[in-house]
Length: 140
Image (cartoon, rainbow, N blue to C red; front, top):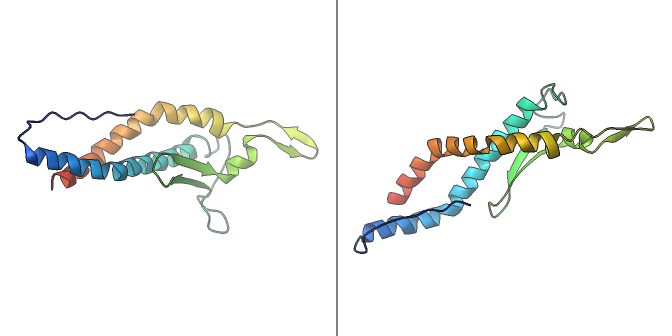
């Protein structure tokens, strides 16, 4: 969780209005940040695990036009979820010709640690590209 501190003079009413505008923009900022992390995570899953390393997923969409790797942000912008139905088929293991095949643990193991290690760089990237425009919007 991040903490934001402001110091201002008690007679500075313009600064108070900027803080009020920022408070109104926080939910939008949170959703935008989670969307950025979800998008980057989706690309990382494709690049690191599904381009022949753990599974070979050649196309971004299947025959019906559905994305094979997708991300979503929940209603309250508290969580980004990355899903991939080709990975779901192999995640917990499967049965082939009566034999139990081992689990691949791509999402719950390898990908989880990859995203945890790159999360700070995704946040810094979002700050560099989007935060200035949001702060300018709050100053208006």
